[in-house]
Length: 485
Ligand code: ADP
Ligand code: MG
Image (cartoon, protein in one colour):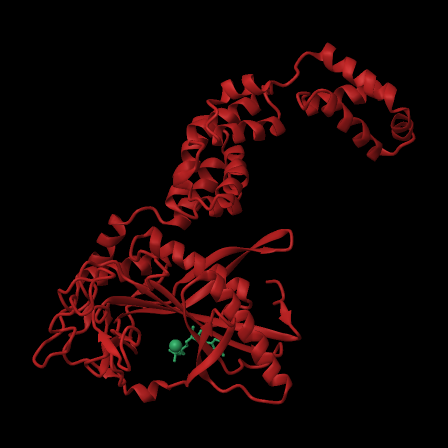
């Protein structure tokens, strides 16, 4: 464990609550559809509107998705969990309570782990999960488009959510964002949530507190509904500075729920925080306990696709990749498939990994593209790697070929030919260039012979230049050593 990074002498403590909207077609306790963007109140049935006499019926699809999530994060799936009523008044909650899980959630424990940059190194960080429970979403109050009035849209009411709660294990905004990205990867990978943050399918609440190292946990404030990774980082950074300023000015932090305003970059208190007691939780008499037998869990397990961490382990094992590479390459199914296709076609897994994490991602990032839109296919990348390892081209030349491939200038060999990038494998020609460069740089030769190893760089550079980058660097080195004794 590395010591936590301090901010002005304070340790930052963060815990996350994430609402992942489950990708079922119908709602959690009714048959109404869940599709986003329909005209207001066209997707709310009698159950969602809480008309008298209606009763909730559990959607099995939502339960299966919760089981899949539990399996993906190595959690305990409760054999018997309980739905509870969380009572509060809000205009977009017609029942006057939300059906959720309280004392006994369906998913218990588990962990999410990911890599973090720490200076030049990367370290693995593990965040423990406390629980994940099933619950229904509320409707929406609409204050726009009305003249002095507000409206209620109940389309979202009853949409299935999985609320995923961590232990207060994160120690910086960077860790928090990395956790959120990893969680996002997991839920989209296993397909239980579409992950669309703009549409609110994946909403994070960040609980933030600060303390002097060694002190007990400080009082937290909860930043609600962070719906982009960029805002998440800004909001937490602002909140941390704000809390430290308050404490330094002699104030105490009041537990509160706050909102982040992207326009001002500030967090603002929305309400003081309710305690569990304020919600008067009690078991919902309309729903029996949720019973999940071992056989059900086993069946779901058997039907699930290979998990990212399992796939990463396989990459380490089958392709002899470092753990870090394997984790990077399993950031999405598409990236993993691209890697496997390249590695299989060229037989050089580590080179394939280097190219995908290097040149390919750089190019994708620069044009804000996903791997599916890569302009160089796995087969082309494999062919390119083949030409590096059979010494036809240098690494430098390979980068030019890659650019050519990306810009649609043809296939690997044709581009090498057209750009004249073939490495110089004719020793005679290379020796002549080296002799010329040695003759033109007597000072470097002297210094090298006097024991200054760095003087060699002053020779290699001009040689590579004179060969128009076509000399094989290994060969250049070998010849230089021979000539300089
Ligand atoms: P609630 O549901 O009322 O918000 P919980 O006790 O379930 O409260 O905690 C919510 C989240 O807050 C959890 O992710 C937990 O890890 C985190 N948390 C609890 N105490 C602190 C603290 N002092 N600082 C930062 N995060 C905290
Ligand atoms: Mg909370």
